[in-house]
Length: 172
Ligand SMILES: [Cu+2]
Image (cartoon, rainbow, N blue to C red; front, side, top):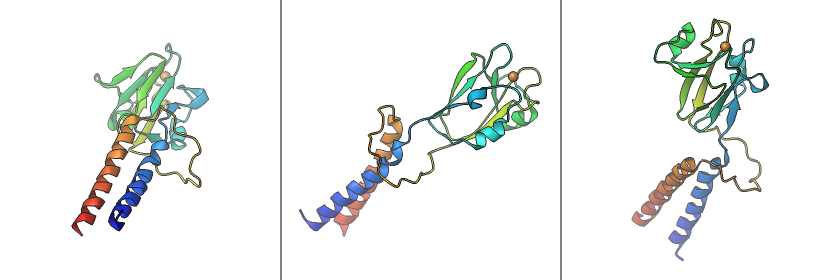
């Protein structure tokens, strides 16, 4: 093996390692309000501040259908507790909301004056989880439920890096 080939192999291994380490993060389900569920007299703003929402995660709203529902609106309607005709409404009592894109999402309860009474939730969905400190490599393989799409995206990035480095070495 030439020194260039050795270098390419070393860089490939490094790039793949960097690309796949963050892929160990597993999509999370967030039960809104934890044990309290979706209810009156709970501070969902404070609750949301303790959580991290990442693309691929799921929000789960749990509530009695007689008293509550879940309405998704835009920012201004959220502030005004206004439910427009085209708002998305969930009513199952066990509503699973996929967080499929980055950015803010706004929800409130559309029943009576529940929104005005604070039954409202704003979250910000992150593209990727910020890197957590990893003192040691994990000893177990990631579960098979790891989102394949994310891994493929990361693999694509790694391939791009390796290709760019290999081309640069050949040109030099
Ligand atoms: Cu309600």
